[in-house]
Image (cartoon, rainbow, N blue to C red):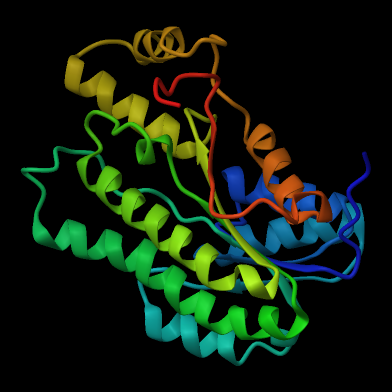
Length: 261
């Protein structure tokens, strides 16, 4: 099965590292043009250069802060290649860890702004283009906490759930335009965020990071963490014509760790 995304353009948020960068690479390998979006300008330029050198096509990048809705709307709505967008990958770093009942209101507000509101702003920009084309893919990188809340990630559990329901609502509204909306739920994946979470747990429990990592792996049936590329493969499939009839679903990629169906 060969996936061909030639002449498709994908906007990939968080595209400078981790799952976002792996997704940008795999989409590019399938022929797509990529607009990389993240905060770190230098990391973006490095990732863009890598895509151009390895795969050709037309790749671009924009430095944005996902907590600044006004800036997001202004820069993307005026983007010179706005009318070429076919695929939107919503991917933003998760909120800080901590308990839900002790979190400050500002933590909830910032997380809601960075995830739900920013995704809404971007979607309002691209959906008009996708409806005219009668083709579109909106894919949200969320978390398995949508199905099973994760201990110690109170704010994240709350916001991820809001994102999942927002996406399901969009899927219902946009299906007749052949625009699909789906959620990817990564489990423990080898990214900087996982490293940070392990470090914080090790400090909290006054033990070695390797002990925390091994304990986490034992809770995963396949016995290891995912690679960012393993998440990206499913994203590329959902962007293809093979997934025309898949919309409004949450797809865990977690090595079997989530206990619910």
